[in-house]
Image (cartoon, helix red, strand yellow):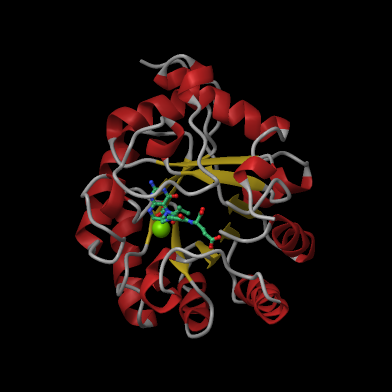
Length: 271
Ligand SMILES: Nc1nc(=O)c2c([nH]1)NC[C@@H]1CN(c3ccc(C(=O)N[C@@H](CCC(=O)O)C(=O)O)cc3)CN21
Ligand SMILES: CC(C)C(=O)C(=O)O
Ligand SMILES: [Mg+2]
């Protein structure tokens, strides 16, 4: 039996309560049971079974080859071991193209142990968010640098730098909340813009490369452990293993830094 830093299990309504109480939300990606035990014991609030597994576990150049079966498999492994964190399963590319298709995948994610599902984008995805929420499936939105848009973006590029793009992002953030999303990941967005979006947002925001003004932070687990995944390292990545001294210590150091507001600094953000 592991010793848990937090004894409670997270529920979706508690996300808004944490935000109202001024408590930062600490999220990490995780793909297997052994690491899930470490994250659970360290008191991580939210675990994302991210489609980033395509790059850090499967060795692909992008997240595009990931399948629904892969997310189901890894969600089940994580859910067996992590009891307290809220588990969020990431829709892989092409699995959320229509509301009915997304619903079928979401049911598999929930039955594998997820409590929430995450999808990239707004636009036609707003209808899908509404469709899932009406069917009692909690949804996390994801805007800004959406890695599944790598082909149209022409690479993993910071989003919202021009005024028109910033305004579009602000409108999308309000729209996903209006459609029923309960959480919003902001990735690869200038820190000032992410802070403005967070202030205007009716739902909590989680940043990755979006500055310290968000309501919480997320990182890819392998990045926090300083593992060379063979891909270009984004500016927002910080190796916590050096200061943490061990894998559990690194996860702990990350959680403490997010809660204290000492991570990220501008060194790990975009101006
Ligand atoms: N290990 C890992 N960490 C991640 O954060 C991550 C993945 N994999 N795979 C899926 C996506 C891809 N991500 C990425 C990948 C690269 C950059 C990157 O190199 N960005 C440039 C931005 C340049 C600019 O537009 O100014 C950078 O210099 O940080 C950002 C996000 C985030 N996600
Ligand atoms: C980087 C996070 C937000 C993600 O979507 C993933 O890990 O797949
Ligand atoms: Mg993802």
